[in-house]
Length: 252
Ligand SMILES: [Mg+2]
Image (cartoon, rainbow, N blue to C red; front, side):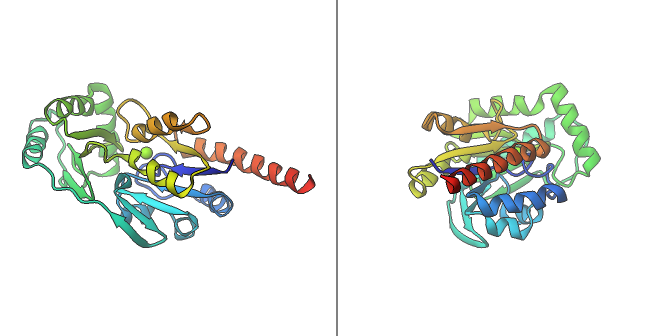
């Protein structure tokens, strides 16, 4: 059975918001040329382009950005979905930002993407050190978890998940990474799917896709990784095993 590989980007293939590291990049471009690969990122296309080099983007079968509301082949946008966000939701988020006990505010608290709004308490203009500081503060005080819980209660028509280190992603219910599986299955009906992601915990943005992948077939796998190094180690062993299999087929 043929395997289709799906990858989250931030934290799975690259350090958060940064470019892919050189050693991984060399190996991964070989991997993408030999195995069918799709990217499934919460980010928009300009961010993905900063993170993954062109030879890797072009070697992929396809790229889902904005949690699957946009689909690209190479640099061509094939299709996208649209949504008008509830005004009440946006004003509630503004109040949450105002009332947060976290001190630092750096601007750019909202980023609207196709089918998603990314909301950051400290703001996306935060410098790298500030980003780390907020991330540790949030882990200790659980601010993002609290936001996720209260929005789920008052705006049940939306899904909220922790994204990256400093923000939450809000999208219409069902407009999560999970939406990509239906399409992938129509393109690859007799294949198994293996998905790598770093946010598969209960409120993580890889969890919805992991859930439908597990539910779809016991041949599928959703693999939770700690960081890009772990992804690389696993892919290297898949790559070696794939080659051994090809050799066995040649000898048969
Ligand atoms: Mg990630």
